[in-house]
Length: 175
Image (cartoon, rainbow, N blue to C red):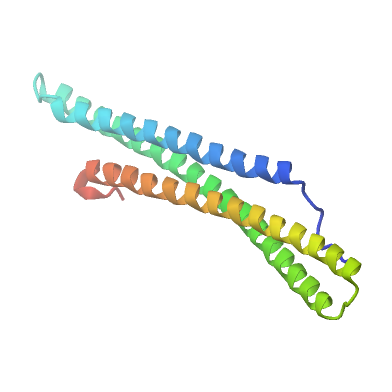
């Protein structure tokens, strides 16, 4: 039997998938917090009145622009971290998809072997092997779906958050 890479147990795979889901949720929450912070800064700036001396107002406006730029930069950094977590999620999906394809190929090979076997006892053992392969296929498919669903949910929420930030930037976009 040929082995392409080290094998993982189902509990280990389950933990990787669950950790990936948690990482996506946690980093999305961090990005959401930074967007809330961005909104607070944007709203606060819009409420300021230009009163006092010309120099004081000019300094205030410059400082508040710096505050806005900093809030924007912090958001961008956390959004980039979320992209990295999504990439890790996709890597796990790729690994599981490769494994799934291998298990499906094995199941097909077992079915091919079955056509050349006549002994009832041997056929029963082949059925058990096919059942094991079917269970592994189902396990991998379920985990892949979980990864995809969590990533898509994250991407939808991330796009909503990006829209909030884009709408709050001067002219809709910072250079």
